[in-house]
Structure formats: structure tokens, C-alpha cells
Image 1 (cartoon, rainbow over the protein chains, first blue to last red):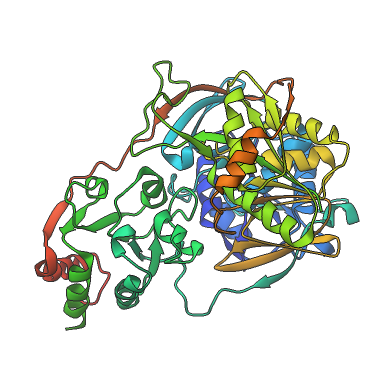
Image 2 (cartoon, one colour):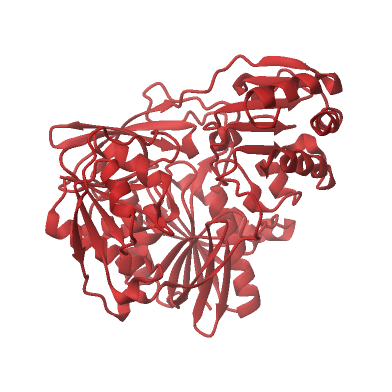
Length: 316
Length: 253
């Protein structure tokens, strides 16, 4: 039996969790899922992705996220069901919870996997290192093999023969010690702002933008396209953009329909953040810049000439 | 307020990564080394917290003798003392690394109020050493923190979530892993560099332990390798770019 840890927000399953379910189906039968909370509608979606049994961790104190408490709930399901593997999406919570579970079980966690092959008692995994610029082939052993899936690598695919999963509620034994670290409140992002991780179009700037003020025209283009603005590590380190806008190894991984890279050289540390874009349009003065070799379309020229002309063209 | 910050020595990779012939490591023959980026921010955060709350700062790393360079860099930034868990330089698993760090922390007589880590090391990307150390020491832990404040025996930590932040509270002593963006690390001063060269470094020899994850080999990730369609140069390219945006259905035609 394979168990997948599923994350959800406001009743909707996280895409990374759906990707993990898709990968998990190839690892063994049957596929079961574990979630914290019991929102309506979730079970049907999970059934469509091949989940036959859903373990819902329910407890009055689990309204808000608390890493040790959530991990305890997952651990109790693992201990009672003894799955051959526990998978999670490679998100902040996915990594954090599997690290807790792994630590408690004395088991390894293979983080950011991109491919997994069962081979007798072990899994042959391929996982991302260096933010995705290198891969590692490794052997993962253990009674319950723990792994996280790198986002945007496996396309989420429903199954042909969906069934409604059997529901099982689990109430873990939790004490104050599990709630030492916990979320006490949320600070919502500004309303109306297009999120980098959800944008269909991302307009990214690099050193070639020249200054914080230079981003005005990128903002203008992003607004016209209903997209978000991003920056390379150079740009956030220089303070031209806030760090939350960074795309790359130490920032966000994006997967828009189009990434417009403006004055971005295309260093490997940047490319790992944007390589899941369906298409890349590079605007760069240097036709030999590495970004051009990764792009689907390129315009050779100064972004401060190209972008105003493009904005004017789109406004016509 | 005594802070321990754990760092890792990693090569500064250029535009293209070259592997050793046995495919076990990156070929670092011509590469300089640095502190892994999230951890450099952890060093800065330790200095800021000690600056405003008082107390000591200690930097720790597990690695080859050459990692003294990164300990000295952290001390040049202002960290007070350093511990090297010296190995033969081979890669250690997350479990083994965390076990050795937890043992070393137990062995420090004065104890720490806060253990800072980077969210994930640039090279191995395991995302788990901080949590494993916390579990081993029985301490509360939050990872991926982009803003950290200390008040009356507890830490308030913000992590990005859903376009905003989720705000964690946890009692000290605690383990926190941070992400780049929490601060902009300072440059070491010349004075700091001179002091760091002379500062003693505590050296310990940790015992390796087995892991359930065993590396077979490294390989380069496939690149996008497209041949870009050149849409033109300068402002004259604008109509063709607009045409492509329409074709892709990104603007109304």
C-alpha cells in the first residue's frame, strides 16, 4: 500500500499533491491518502486521482497548522497502516512534515524526487540537487520509504476509473507538547495582486533592467497581460525588488504559460526557477546570452526600447 | 540570548556544472567556495538578534578541514566563536549530519536559546537537517522562515504561504531554519577578517552513521535546449511580439 500526504487550502487540493498522487500510482497498490481536516468535496477529487481510502486526521486543536501535531497524526496513520511508502509534495509543509516523520521513525527522506522506480525491496529514485540543476540517482531503502516530489515535474493526471474513496477518521493522541510551534495568525497578501506561483504570464527582470525604477515598464506590461513581475537573484540582492519576487534556486519556482525574461542573463541558478514555464521569451541585448539558448522566442535589443514599444503596440 | 548558527561549505558554481569522472561529486578544481546562501542569511540573523538582545554567537559546520574558511568568513562577519565537526570531506547524509550536530549541541556546556539553520543546503537540498536536530534535542522547530522576532522567551516567525504569511509562535529554546530574503547579509570588515584568522576553532570528530538513502551517481539535469525564434531587434520587434502574445491567447486579438 502506498500512502500520500495531501495538502489542501479552502477545500481545494494543492496541485503538487495531485502530482504526487499521479506519481504514487506507479509505486504500488492500493493508493491511500492522508489529510488533516475533513473538508467536503476533497474525497471526490482524490478518488478521481486513484485514491481508494482516505484517512482524515480530525482533532479539535488541528484547525491551524502545528508541525509536530500534524506530523503526529500522519505518524499514527503510518504506524497503523504500515505503507510501503509515504509521499508528499515538495512544499514547505511537505518537506517539514516528512522530516518530522522520518526523524521519529529513524528513516531517510528522499527530497525533491523527479522519478521513482520500485526495484524489489528498494526504490531507485532520481532527485533534484542544486535546486534542480543537478540530479542524483539514489537507492532508498526502508520499511516505509519517505519521499517528496519536486513541483512541476510530473503532470497531474486523473485515472480513467475513478471511485469514491472509503473514508476513515483518525483522532490522534495529542498533548500540549505537540503544539509548542504553531500558526497563531495569518497575514494575507495584498488583495488584487497576481501571485507569482499562479500567474499565467510572468515578466521577469535581471541586471539589464538597470535600476528599481527601471521595473516600471515591466510592471506596466505585466498589468496589461494580467501577469506578475519577478526578478533574478541579482535584482533582489540589489534591493531593486523585494525578495518575494525572486525566481531561482533560492526563490520561487514558477510554471506560467509564458515567462518574459527581460535583461536576464540566464544563469543556471535562475533557470532552475523558470524552466517549468511552458514558453520563454527572452529580451536581451546580447544574442549570445545563455537565456537565449533556453528560450522559445527572443528579441535582441535594449529592454528599455523594446518594452515601451511593446506596451504601446498592445495599447493600440 | 545565545545563538548557534549551522552552516555548510559549498562550491560557487558557475554557468555550467562539471562533474568528477566517477560522477560522485561536482568537479571543484577551479571553483571558489562559499557559505550556502540561506545559511549566510542565518549568520546575519544571528548577528542581528545578538545585537539587539545581547548574548553570544557561535557558528558550527560539519565538513572537511577546508571548511575552516567558511567558519572564518562567519567570524569575519562578527560571529564570536566556531566549532568544526571535522570529517574526511565525503558527503554525509541528512540523518548523520543532524545526529552529529545534535551530539555537539548536547556537549556545549553553556547551551543555546536558538539554533539557526538554512532552509536547505544549496548542494544536497535535503530540507531536513534542522527538523532532525530539533526532534533529536526535543526542541520546537519551524522551517522556511522569512522574518524572525524574539520576545519574552518566545520566537515569532513568519513563513510565506498563499501569497501572504503564516505567523508561527514557539517557545525558546527553539530551532529555526531561514530562507534567503530574511535579511541582506553584511560584508565582513577588514578588522573582522584579521580577528577571524586568529580566533581559535573548537574541533570535534563526529562518528558517521548509516542512512537509508544511498547515492549512486550525479548527473546533469536535462536543459530546455530550445532554438529560439528571433522575433527581431529593438523596438521594431514589438508588432511580432504582440502577434505571438495573441497567438498564445495571452491578449485579446
